[in-house]
Image (cartoon, rainbow, N blue to C red; front, top):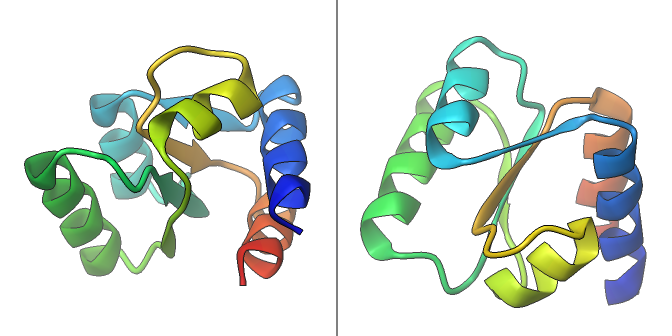
Length: 99
């Protein structure tokens, strides 16, 4: 079950439907491009608050998922603490897999 959402995350990344980096994600949230934000469980408290507050304000769903190493491995990049999904289909599927 857990691996399914990580596989979908990898697929979304390969399809070019993900954005990374705090500033890019915040920009995507503000412009309504982000359909889902996945946040690592070991993210710093200030970054977590900034992302969750922005998601709540713009009504973008977010999920706290695995640690940064697991998320980074799933997308093949290093040290990623947050990932924005830019495609509604991928976002819906990943949300359903995360529960």
